[in-house]
Length: 326
Ligand code: FPP
Ligand code: MG
Image (cartoon, rainbow, N blue to C red; front, side):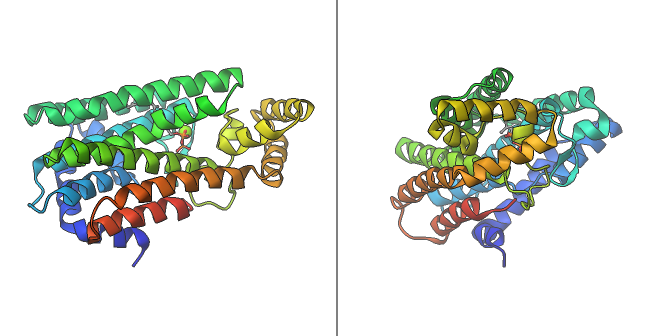
């Protein structure tokens, strides 16, 4: 059994029901739009956010999980899905999870509209369900995601970055939605405010570690991410491994590395040279150390709960995030 299968085991039935719920709500009358939607949903990936929402519901309730948890899980997954469809347009990325991105299949204009359609349909289902507190709880995560992406774009454009800004960006673009996923899972089953806050903190720590891992994997030419490697360098994006190296470099060295970063937008040799510098100068190890700190924080938060198979799944999810190569 793979680690992910082990994590999913205690909530297998709930996950199956959630997938069926998602399929039944994410529909289109138009066959072309439906085919796009099917393509995106068939390509959805690991489903970490719904997994987190359902585990958080299960951790706080022994009752059968119902529509509120399904709705919470669907909304966080659809925000994530739509954001990646838009992200691939912004990054002009040809691939997502080993398949052609929506923009490379149908063009950027249709990909933007497809992302919009996904969000509109998901929140339509959210509001017509009558469980207003769930979409209300989740919606601010979408603002943060957009804000994180906007600040990141501006940093790429101006080739600037600081540790404070980097941490703020990854919090907004990734950790907030994982935090929301865990917290809203608890909200869905009426958990106390204390538990909701605890789940939000767990999701934040896990999410920070998750994005740092993503940024490390971008440097790994052997990683099976289904995306081209060193994409960040090609986009002029300064993430933690390079940032750490820049912080420690003397000013003349820093200038040389920044010149390489500028060249990396068009020149594969510059990409490889910069990647090698980051590796040799210990940028990946430094990033791993910070990732481990966040992971330790996430694990510590879970110790507030008595041992159970659901708590075990959340602990294994931490292992999975730290060890993944995709
Ligand atoms: C992936 O980052 C992108 C995100 C985590 C967020 C993208 C957010 C937006 C495009 C804002 C719009 C939001 C909504 C809700 C439509 P990455 O480029 O570092 O990762 P990647 O390597 O997987 O592309
Ligand atoms: Mg991207």
